[in-house]
Length: 156
Image 1 (cartoon, rainbow, N blue to C red):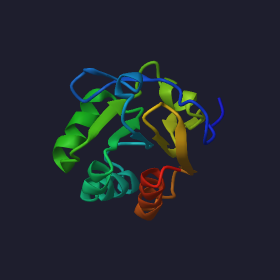
Image 2: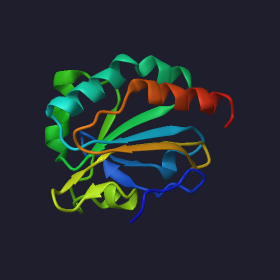
Image 3: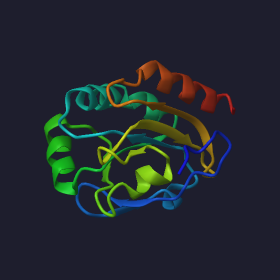
Image 4: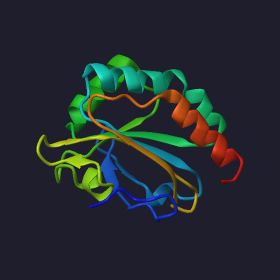
């Protein structure tokens, strides 16, 4: 699958949160959502990225944006990591079928069995309004998220 382009309808997904409750992108329609795919819980770069998002969560909340982190880790690993780091936003498990959501967004690394660093801003109608995809070792800057939130506020 290829990465959805800006203006494309975002692929729907339903994944379990850290307690096994299903979270559906379709059910979140009516408000914007940022999907943050990441390789692995407890890894150095992922920890840095998601803690930076946690530390800037108020910017997402002020924009009315739901922030969701997604990896191919099992739900229990994500729960332990989220409790340790106190992320303050939901983490979703794309563990089984392994990487199905990451594949739908064109960010699944088949060779290594993990999600690449892909982030997608989906508007209230379910349309992709911004995205960035970085390779495994390259963190996404918080400034890119801030720019996307500002563009959303301007109605672009």
